[in-house]
Length: 341
Image 1 (tube, rainbow, N blue to C red):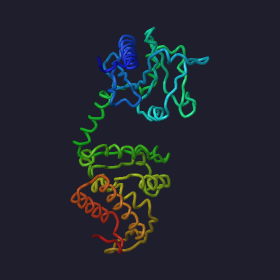
Image 2: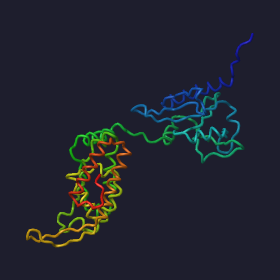
Image 3: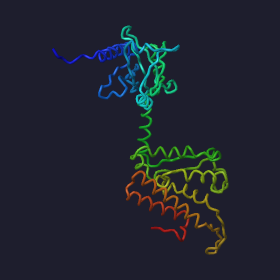
Image 4: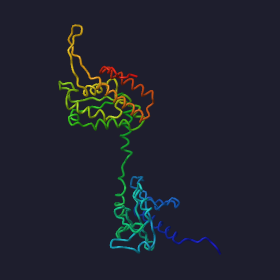
């Protein structure tokens, strides 16, 4: 009689999977997940890592070979496993760790090694790696295997703080950044830049933070000098101004105009002239129009870039652009050649 033949090599592979499943579930306490054959490109099973508090989302990929033939070739350190070069490329490009396991179906034991490029050697058109004699897969293997995956973190508890801050940012009237004198004297801008970046985490926070930011400078109350004349402050603000992407979008154009004023005055060489108005002597500031125009250009370019990158609606852009220019004209007179359209 004529019937389909039962492939003995397939049976041996299935026996190996059965043996490995028992070891993984009983010794490691992890979830054993078989890869479908039609999606088998060199990975036979996955180990889903479980800890006391539950399934972690961490996974190890496994190539499994079963039978005495895989234990025939050995060196002083272990058994030699040989593989195809296309599989090696696949393993090393994998986003999760890949281990290779050979199974002695007679003894019902499994031995393993990490597919580590530094442990491989060339073998003609293929490659080889040594699976150490002492690397039997048992419960003692768990700690080493866990070293190959990223640490398990309690993201849920971390997100509670993240979500709480998001809620506060969305519902506050103003967002105030206090910059201490120490940061200015150290020319440190990372804290402010990171604070502004925090407002860009998602579209809703960006929208809710529009024109809410006020930047205050602390620590100079007893200093009689104008802040924009102090050398270390001039250095600090000239350094930080170009680095804050979205400043024109986020900065409050009323209360926050003080920081804009500091940007302008710190970048200008301010001259004075004494004049008499209605019989009263006053000191008039003389500004450089080219400096004013240059800063306006930077602010508008920053606003354009930010709104384009974050797909800010045109009517919102127009409103902020208008508010920005109105705010600037209150701080310094616009240069004669500045286009207000």
